[in-house]
Length: 412
Image (cartoon, helix red, strand yellow):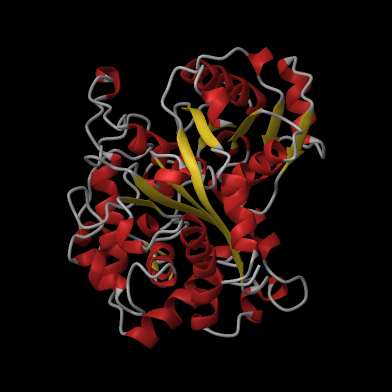
């Protein structure tokens, strides 16, 4: 779907039906050694159904992701069987970090085709307890080219590091810019009830942290965690009988530039490939970056949001570092970003938490002050109506994006 083609009209036609997210849920995050992957998935399903005011029998479709721990090639139907479901529609999506927004698109397509009306999108795993951080680093070699990268020891973090270093060199981006992303998101995570890391850190704290792979300190890297999150996609008509105000999917988009980092043409080509997803989603939604109230941007490493901000057109090329250091991404800033702490401070479950947080923001429910047992706080962006969220798989290889709105497409 090249930008500006009639496919934009087709995407708008599908979303004009009022396809929306009508329920969200998430579990505690961190180290949850007493529950397995499917137990976490069942737990978050109950939470999400309760949020929507539904029972399991009301759900006629299920879309799952994948598991690093459970060995099943039929993940969606295995989970359906585990929970006693007999869905009329089922699918599993596996595109790394790009999976979560694509789960929403898969659900929307199924609804548009008449295959389902109420689709549960759910992802969860006991990755930290079942594999460990070092185990995940070892598994990450699978993202490297079998002939040209893996034999030389390139890991995912090493590939990201190579790309980040080139980006920083080309645009004279200081190390402080990466640290500012971490510091900003740490302030937000301190207010999120289930964030794995709740301590606010400074730029200096990040710069003094131990190195993992240049230019990344330990705090620059996303977490390895146990937990689950879910959301329900349905029609506007069906959502009217549910508990919560629906949040509408008004824009969708995908972008791709390379599979392996050694095949990436340039920093510019990577920026354009991942940026295409966000630009397309905004084009379908009929909005510009200036219309956005909140951004929940995939942050596998502290560098990732910077190149995404530029690719989406929120910042000029090479300007995202200064933009973040100026405080624009903070609560109260020009465009609050990753108001839940992101993968770096809340938890790592692809972009599932990014979507859940965007929905909570647009429902006006991102205030965890009442969760006194978790010492939650208020991370609500006042009067938020439009949000962009994305996920990226591989080393910024494949990206998917959603624009979400508190109002239906006709009013967005």
